[in-house]
Length: 302
Image (tube, rainbow, N blue to C red; front, top):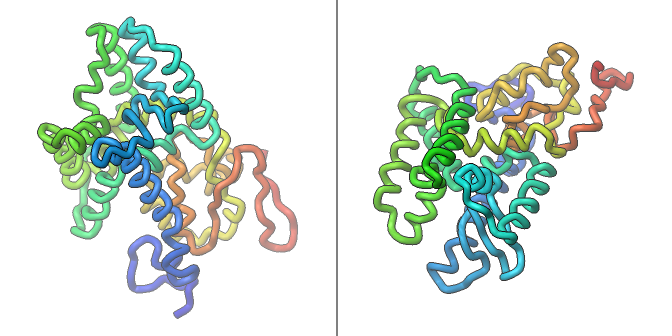
């Protein structure tokens, strides 16, 4: 079958599998899942098996007894709650902020967060079950949620968000027994499955909203060096958890260069995987050269 023709199977990525092979069409997805599972296991092998490679959780950890890592969102809440962070925590937050300024703030959501595979599975199942329709919640709602968590910290003098944070509850549940965490995680799953596509991660989660603020200035970006080769198959839009970030760069709207600069891009790489024309690639925010398609070099419109 000609890989450039649309097949009878309309699922996203079918053309990419035909053109590149299954492994190449799932490379970044496999790497993401390996990262998420691997990071989670690093936290669990200590309490489970006594092998303390990493002590702590995603809020604060100490790796190999010398590397502190601190969630900047937790530090911000601590400051608003009038709790002075220790020196080690401040060192850890500096390392984390510098890291996400390099790789992209919302890379946390797609490469680290252990709740992301759960919500991705909900979306996968939603597609397989043919569930249509969705509640409408504006994507900026997550910033209102972020604001409320910060207000709660200031008013209560505590990091109140951690009482219901699905990420923290999953960690505590896997170590001490899931208990109430089951109910919270099940609620997130069912919300994404029956109520809204990518509802939690894409519209409500204040953690993702916070990391998007760091991601606004990050170096690593999804680029579109071959955007002229796009055949409008729409597969990238179908798999992207934040599809609104693609169109300006793909269609050069208002002279947008061929690089996704929108803060809420998660750098998940799924658009790279499912594109049979190799329109997308990882790169930096600076070099915006477009690959020539007719033998004449092209550059992004200024």
